[in-house]
Length: 495
Image 1 (tube, rainbow, N blue to C red):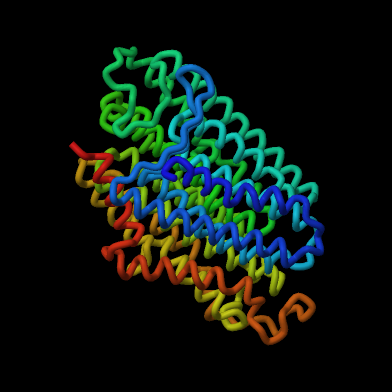
Image 2: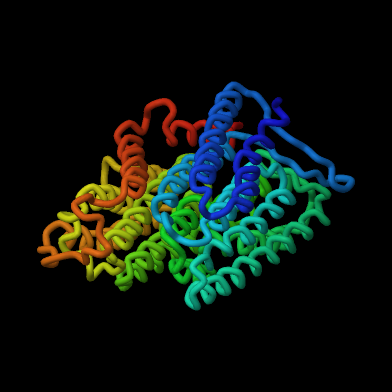
């Protein structure tokens, strides 16, 4: 069972996805049952695995491919953190997408690729070596492209071409780095503290390999200057935007950076090579640049997209600072940012679907018309700013303490500057939404009458923002993301 559980987690979204492709559009009940049933089953399996891993149980599936190289699915504390993020937010996004796409064409195609996208994300998270990671990394590109171009408009096709150009280029770099590394070491297995140190390889060669690998995954992580595809992809439906920003693509890139630093090179050895400081500086530049760009976006989803470019780089910054406390801040932000950002995109989708509001300049008084949706948006925005007691404050607190711990005081200034910029592009939205008078009438043909919005669109953001608030208020309690990340960091920095 220990070998088969990772496969069962993978199959819980793969099998429903393959069946959904064959369903007619009118099979709404069966499609919904497969979607929700697969998501719930995945969460149940993951809870069992988390309990096992916490008590020292090993879960690994290994299939030999060629001599010396295996296809490996391995569930450790780090992978289960990312898989659980994907599974829980998949369930929330599925509920949201069912309501959002009600009556839309091509729903079986959408939910089929949606399930395959989650399967690729889960496989990438549980990859036990760099080869398996590469396979699922490319699978993620291929399964998310149809979601980006789902609407079929010229803008969607243009965004899809940009997405493919960027991510396939990243895939080529990752492949090149993987082959180069294997030719020198004869192994690609992920190992705590890495597998490169002590092999007598020229440090300059290792620095080049590190750069190639980081650039390869940095495309999906939207690291500057490889971020251009992400704002363009906002033409996709709101559930896809939520998936790209909170669960799948950008988080896969950030997770890849974590794996390369910790389980390929080893954080101490990477620091000794001098590659972590340049990575931290690149992350800091991305944080400030993207936050500044967000200030000038009137389109709400584009403002949120540049916010994502900035916020995801907090993860990279925490890892690259190369200290245990900063690592906790970076890794826990992977979860915290996912829940905050998916809340914001759910709310943006509600505004567009219910009232036809797409721009910040159109949001005056919207809090009075949609108080629950705007309330969720407000709490998530305060979380992004880093205001207590939201989870964003927890992330930034640990990042700042971690930077001071290892003498990287400049990073605290970056975090402070970023928070000020976050406030500058979120607070005007909150002011106009709550305090400006609303229009005399919202377009009736696009409203739900006196209801705020459809229940399937309202429940997901309320639930996800409630999680961010509770994890901020009770951050030190057992079972929170912070508690699990501290468990991970204790293993990564164990003597």
